[in-house]
Length: 216
Image (cartoon, rainbow, N blue to C red; front, side, top):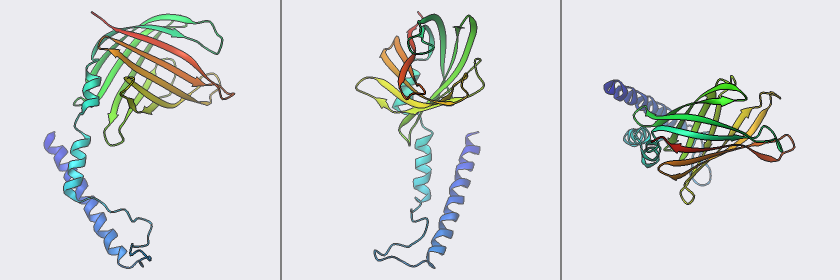
């Protein structure tokens, strides 16, 4: 498998180098502006093959953020508090989550189970850290809907919090809704997630809070 990956990387870099050479050939026929730069739609210089290989190697190698995610591998209990709409009475439930790093430690996959509105609830999330973009990326699917929620955002070292934003489909209105989520690492055995959604009048309200404690 490793040999196949190396071969694939090499082929991709060779293809990119060929494209770069073609661009350079075409640029000879394009006039230069007053600064001496070639005038064209694509003036960004491609890195050389050695740099591209290093960039790719860096991109596929787990870093400090991935190691931080790995610390939360294992089983967790969740105390879930939900609000269906602004001013609605809170609903409390208990959930469980099992976290496991996958794909060479680049992503954490979590399986969630519990109850929601008197029905069994099951969900699967993946969380990764994009090394080049320097942001976390998460996906979420569950048995209460047919969509996939994607969220992205940075790590705040001062508060030990991942701050992510994204969109989800409101099941009732069928409309896209802005979503914001904070995930705070309180200590090695305690975490807290808060989710906020935007209402049609442009106001944000807190719809969910989950306090996680590691199973002993």
